[in-house]
Amino acid sequence: MALADDLLTQAHRLATMDTGIPSQANLRRAVSSAYYSLFHLLISEAVQQAVPSTPAGLRERASRAFSHAEMKKVCARFTTARLTDDLIPLLSHGILPELLSVAEIFESLQEWRHIADYDVSFTFLRADALTSIGEARRAFSDWNLIRNTDEATVFLAALAFGARWSK
Image 1 (spheres, one colour):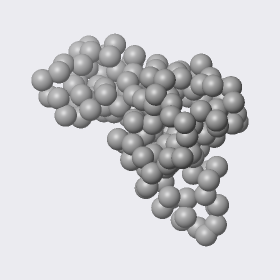
Image 2 (tube, helix red, strand yellow):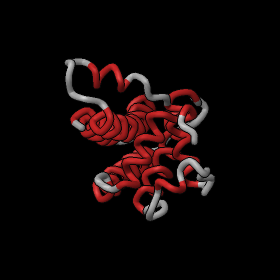
Image 3 (cartoon, one colour):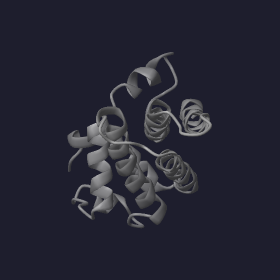
């Protein structure tokens, strides 16, 4: 989780480093880093659960197999009650509120990251960046509460296998 934590720290540093009117570059990078902190947290958790630590480099290689778009689609399945028959039997307690929160925040942060990275017509305020960072922190906290549950394991597997995973 070191990279995820470092990215969240970097996001805050970027959002707060300018006195007066902050630069758009710093705010945009802060929003993007907030998203990437959650992205890398979830990938790290999934790879640690599913991939052995040896041989050296295997987990790093497996981490490259995750897709932003597929992860967002999985989150949408968990947040819009579009759980299909392949997931329902695996979620004995349904979707935990904290898991719902993580999935919703992932979707939201990814949308903000797209705006930050590609929509130069949008002007960010420091408050926008700090809100994104706060949401990422909340997702980290919520994740920490449920990370050892069966529901979290199913979520991570769904993130890893995306569209290729069906009944």
